[in-house]
Image (spheres, rainbow, N blue to C red):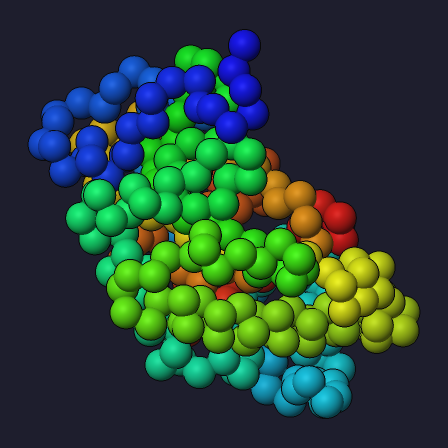
Length: 279
């Protein structure tokens, strides 16, 4: 029997597989036919113009909600009909968003031995990883990732955070602060749209003692993308997910009306995903 801190099989980095020049992917990454990527553009051209709502948050600040009622209505409708929406004018500097993306891109292109110093285990999953779960022989996703805890402070361990590239830890810390502030503002709006006091949802998640974590997904080039998934279909178990996309790596899909819709990210937007607990 495997112990909790052990992986059931040797961990292979997907990036290493991709860069090895292989022409076909190993069997352990081939998804069942029912789970393979949905290419809706070929199946239904009408989906080409469909996108999750894009909502302007101008007027929303830490100190108060000055959003017009029309914007509040857009958010409410997006939550009911999609569970997803994009936000622009959200208060996070576009230049800093670009810096965050480039910082993580630099990390994943470091020499393997430097990244391996941060290899994770099933005990907490914190660090540099390539699989989830300890089921032996499981079909794996075509991606590597980095996962870490940001809040509560009792779980925040800077030793698990990557030191290279330069200023990486400082960038991660600042990014966490910005996203916690933005998430708090969105939680207020969601509470108000439900007819509740503005702090109702925040308090339900622990008030000032809530949890926040960061996961960065890295999707290497795949020689047979029609057979694999970078990240298997799922719903997010928490309350709220704020996703910063990489415009060089399209592919995020959301499920609506029994169809998979490919998201078209707006420039310097965050994608908001209503998690299972708020849903």
